[in-house]
Image (cartoon, rainbow, N blue to C red; front, side, top):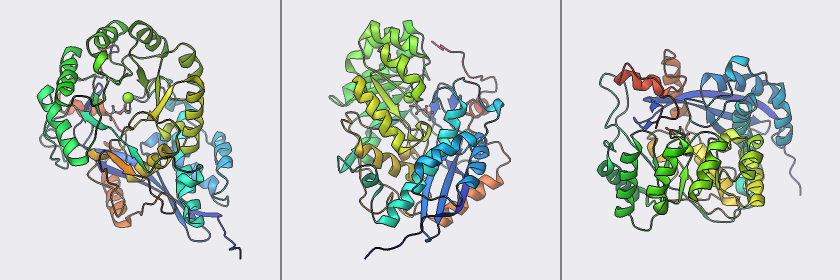
Length: 433
Ligand SMILES: O=C([O-])[C@@H](O)[C@@H](O)[C@H](O)[C@@H](O)C(=O)[O-]
Ligand SMILES: [Mg+2]
């Protein structure tokens, strides 16, 4: 007996929130005490709700609202149409500078990329709703999981013990990490708490010799564990080559040592150390130059800005064709996105590198139950949809924080956060070293 379903979208709810974030350092500055995210809920005529999550800065919100309007009356099965509608969402010229996005260190900021960063949350919400309606997990809608767990890497950051005095913030229990001893202690805590077997250090914060020392200390403390270093393009080609010569032999890969595909190609040619990126290949248009010049050996897909889970699979197929590895990039995110990342990663053939996730740094979430890392991995859910449940009280509380903010925190700005501690701070000119 067939059951008639009505998967027409009757309501789309957009809830901007601010979530607590520890004082994590990167080459631009430091994370603000609260960071914006956008939670998307899509409700069908049958009363099923699908959820998605993406960046929540103003430039994304101003696109999400008109896009949400266009979705009403369409069906959650019409995901291709959702992407066709994207072109109709106007992006203000001021938002497009084709320059590196200083807030997120995730490559150039084009109109398409901004649109895709919104569409991805709607795509995930549609797939969640469709999965719930069919009684199937999202991975089944993507063709089925190839593994039962997805491995993640510990994401180590140089970090202050707390946000500057007088700045309203949540406390964290990770302590400071400002030298090799601190970085190794942080790595131990990650391993003890979550069982991670590989480590990525966010670099570009201190002069390269200090970061080389930290990587060597990690290698000594955790022999045989894969290590990565990611200075977000802070180094010149010469500095990148020097670092590669110093620690290339103990790195699984070096991530975005320098900015731009030609410079990455030069480092790759001169060192032979595998290079990964979430900065120079961030759109389909950037693939040809990077792959034909052997500039990168691993692309880290961020489903938010690549345009969702299906686009991540398209990217994985292109990477496979060129013999380039693929894995998952992370910026600050919550459990909805971790679930989405885990579903898609479970379906990618030949996933040879542990994925990135900031999730352990997020003490707050909008779910009734947090996702768990066991032995450094997240179990792939077989429950319908993403397998997560929104906690409406938590969502409301984090939205209230966003409403009460005077605007200072609604757009991530790591340099502004650094200026609270160091009033003369400006985002460093690149290359910084
Ligand atoms: O959160 C950070 O400070 C990271 O640097 C983030 O902004 C990057 O997008 C990212 O984690 C990366 O791998 O480049
Ligand atoms: Mg990176």
